[in-house]
Length: 305
Image (cartoon, rainbow, N blue to C red; front, side, top):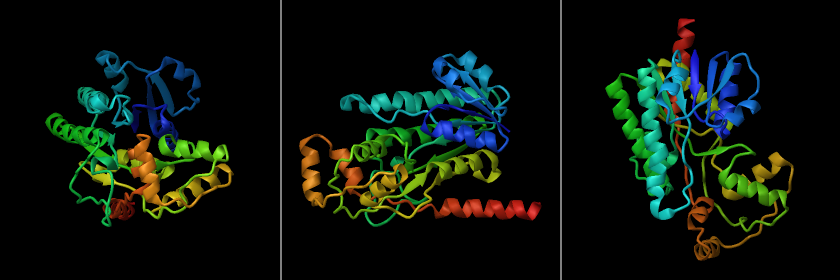
């Protein structure tokens, strides 16, 4: 199978391309920067191509002959909160729409879109997000992800192309960006973190597990038309997450017991309310529907072998 991956030199893209190539898929890695071509590892099953996502003709040429496109590119941060939704939609919606249209013109049969659990919301209160949860995003990022999912569903139905959507929670690897990067830097500097008194519950998905799920999304007929949640570890509190990062990088975790209410107050005072919500709040995922689908697919494959 020939699989094109957008955002191939990103955090998820780099790992996914390697994962797919090791399983004998022919990978076309789409890179935005020509300079990134020189850093792409040589592999007989993987070919890196520099692309201009505004140049339809060159993109069509690259996509020709592919069976599946895995679309990973997303804007995850916006500098100007007043225009945040517009900024998110420009990439998360408009670019995704262009990729879908070009993929259909190139004769590609399936688009796999990496969305986010934030398309459902920012927090859970005792009841985990599941496949039956009603989407209620509250942030510009989450809203942009949900609107992109909905537009891709409309487009793929019109264009006769299969769509599979994956909504991961926090994607974990010791070298991840975002909050994990911030926590890792603090641990590397030996800084004490005032997080010992937090007793929240947050789901994560490890990077290898996500790559495996995305591979299944490319390969399995049963994945067509699915919107999948995923998680592969027991829920972690923020202190447990910090200790996991510390263990992975070989550093001690120095945690101080500070009341969560005081942390929230301090975060509001310095304009870090959203970061505090992520560190202190709950976000749990019930991915039993995804697991059941994968188990039934495995059983079907075993019965036909």
